[in-house]
Length: 233
Image (cartoon, rainbow, N blue to C red; front, side, top):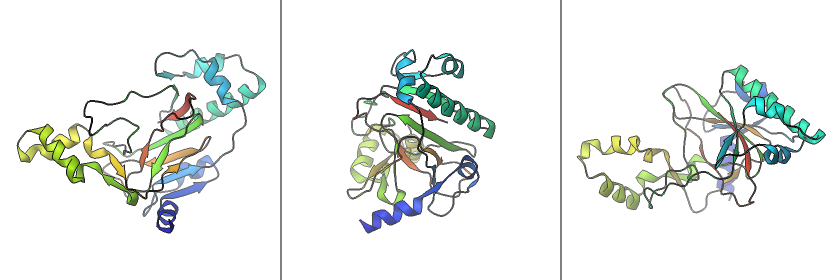
């Protein structure tokens, strides 16, 4: 257990404001920075008053502004608008979603590649992932030392080779083209880290200029039965 705590402390850095969230550089093993917050307001009211469409509904700023809300709902809306505007001013492209559930990937039963699997984000340019769960089950991360890239697990790699059925020289490209190389499996004694409700996180992404390992993260199983209110970019 002490090893698990050590890796978690090395990987995560906490800040108390937006400036430090975006300005603190990743370094060493540290690839997740969290602005830890206790938010005021009723975010569930917003979830219940938005017109939902399908499994995932995007809430546009105009719709958010037009909602008729109680005083507590208005406090929640102010926070959402502030976060959206701060991230936009920083140069990000935040999206606010109400999520009933994500689609499950059953294309390869032995290797799901949906967001419920621990994975890293990849980009051709230098960028970070920002996310905050305001309501519902929060996202989770996994210390890199406690995860194993699935394509390196012998039995999974053997199944992938059967699926590929091509020349050996193209196998690694096949893994990347189908995003198999982005996914990880937690080791048996792994300490999975819940990111909490209301905290705004910045996670390292796999990109050519990256100086730290990308952060392993996943969407949570919706155990509570609540719809999630999630900001992500």
